[in-house]
Structure formats: structure tokens, C-alpha cells
Amino acid sequence: MIRRTIASRLEELANRMPAVAVTGPRQSGKTTLCRMVFPEREYVSLEPLDTRDYARTDPRGFLRQYSGDVIFDEVQRAPDLFSYLQEAIDADPAPGRFILTGSQHFGLSEAISQSLAGRVGLLHLLPLSLEEVRRFERAPEELWETVWSGGYPRIHDRGLDAADWLRDYTATYVQRDVRQVLDVTDLDAFTTFLRLVAGRTSQELNRSSLGSDAGVTHNTARSWLSVLETSFIVFRVPRWHRRFRKRVVKAPKIHLVDTGLACRLLGIREPGQLPTHPLRGPIFESWVASEILKWRLHRGLDPAMSHYRETRGVEIDLIVEVGEKILGIEAKSGATVASDFTRGLRVLGDLVRDSPESGSFEGRLVFGGDSPQERSDARVVPWSEVQREAW
Image 1 (cartoon, rainbow, N blue to C red):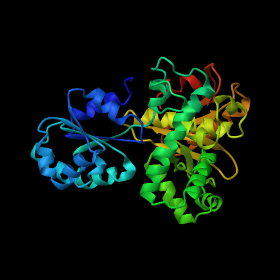
Image 2: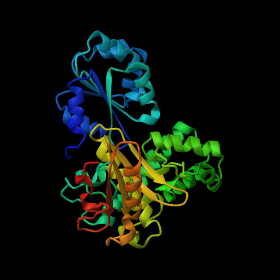
Image 3: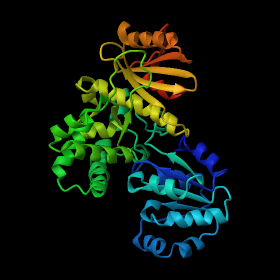
Image 4: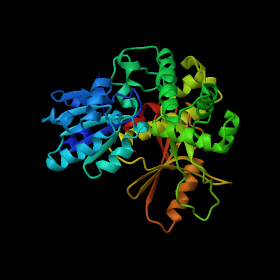
């Protein structure tokens, strides 16, 4: 297995915080990461029923077994343990005593905020970024194969068929885990909902329309989306807060975190279907958005991502605020840069520069071609170099 980009941040936090928690979607590599970074530590999984029962019924006795530094995997399985971890940390706040991993939709973040606030560093591990995928010997080299196969580590580490693995992942983790949290009884409705969400990737979110198309209520759609988001299946990009005296769309955009999973849910069976698929552009935009999200989260940064669209006028796919600098980002799947690709970036750049609020503006155009360019309105970034930018 390759070294993950987030490993350096994990080491840094473990050197100054008593506990570090790593959360993320199922099969994103949390356990492998922690065991690779800390190979000498004792490792304890709370997945087995007997271990879980011990941690739940006698938490003090359970913790006394591990006087040295330890990794507790799937720690959300024993939520009452967090109060006793707090007690142990307060008694001995030495850095790096506990490394915790877990799935957020089972309540990990809530338990941390209630019991371990100020005592734990929190990191989010998403599937592989492009720079990480390329650390494997058999990494895909072509754009649409990269987008179609996605970034779940096991696919690339073991050279598995992405379509087969993602089919099993959807049934085993997405449908089972999310249904367990939501107590979903109508599997057909939930499966339809998942596919509809995938079909709306990189679009503005309309819960009422989504629920209506899936045959469920607005409240049900909102509940299902919330769990998909905390499960790192989807993420929302809110609208940008600046208005410039313009009428702007307030709805957030929704993206699937992994485009391989999006393709699986949309029935795209092979990468050769993507170049002519009607959702090719939105899928590429979600791939770019996800790569930028990974770049930031895997370095311990807040997402700081938004989008901007006026009701009659300019639209920008992504905006990232880096200190006082504002990055406007457009994603275009075409291999050739057309003259109108950077129009929105030019208009928004003028609005920012004319605004009384401080801050500089830089444009980026990420496209499906291979040659970088420096244009007056934006830096043109080939898809293959997206992880070389400082987002």
C-alpha cells in the first residue's frame, strides 16, 4: 500500500494532541493508514462483538489494558467509551496516546464534540486523490479511465475490476450502512434515490424535486441526504457569500465524492461510455471538485469551497478562499480550450477587484486536455496536473 498524503498531518497532530481521530467513508483506507504510520502501536478493533462488549460493559478495565500508545479502530461501535477516554486523557495528556478511527455517520463527530473537545485532532480521509492513485504501478493513465475507476484504495492496490468492486461496495456498505442508520424499509425507493442523486451530481440541490422524483417526502429526502453527506458519499458546496449587488442563486451544489461510485450508480459500465455520455461534463466537474476537496482535507485544511451563479449572468463552478486570495475555478471536460471557457472567470475577477472588500483574484480552468497555458483571465490546468496546484 502507498503512503497517503494525509500521513504527514497525522504524524504532526499525534506529536502535539493527546488523541487523533481519523474518519471518512467505508473502505477509504483509515485502518491501513494508521497502522502504516504507527506500526509499533498496539492495534485494537472494536468490530468483534466480544471486544466491543468488553469496552461497553467495563470501559475502565478495558482502557487499563492499554497503558502504552494504542490504535482503537471502529471506535464508534462503543460510544460510551469516549467519556472514559476523556478521563484517561485528563489524567495523562501526553501527546499521541490514542489514535481513533471510525465512520462518522455512526456518531463519531458528535461523540468527539461532547467528550473530547480540545483533546483530539480530527482528520478526514477520503478515497485516493489523483496524486495517490499514481503511486500505484498499474494506475490508469487516461482521463476517462481515471474518472470511471474512482479512488477507493482496494481497487488500485489489488488491481481489481472497478465495476465489480463498486457493485459490491454499493450493496455492502452504501445500501446496508445507510439503511441501517435511517431504518429504511423500502429498498427500491432508496436505490432510486441514490441513482437520482448521482444523476444530479454537480447540480444545484433541490430537495423537493429530488424527493418527488424518488417518490418520497421532502423531509425524507432531507434526512437521506444528510446521512449520505455525513457518510462521505456526497458533499455540498454552498453558494458564495459575496453578492456584489447581484441577484444570486442561493442553493448549494451537490457532488458525489467518488466519480467511480457515481458511474456505477448511473449504469456506466466502462470508461469508453463517458466521452459521449450526456452527464460527461457534470461528472468531470464533480471529479475536479472532489480532487480539490481531497487536496485540502488531506492537508488538514477546511474545505473553504463555494460556488457562484447569478440568476442572469456569470456562473463559477468553484470558489476557494486561500487567505486573502480568491481562486475562481471552472471545470471543462473538453480537450480543447474554447474562447468562452474563461468568460465567467474574467467577469468575476472584475467584480472582485472592484469590490470594497479586500482580496485578490486568480482564475483557474481545469480541462480535459494535456497542455498547460497561461492566459490573461486564468491559468489553464490540464486534468493530469490538478493535484500539482496549491488549492
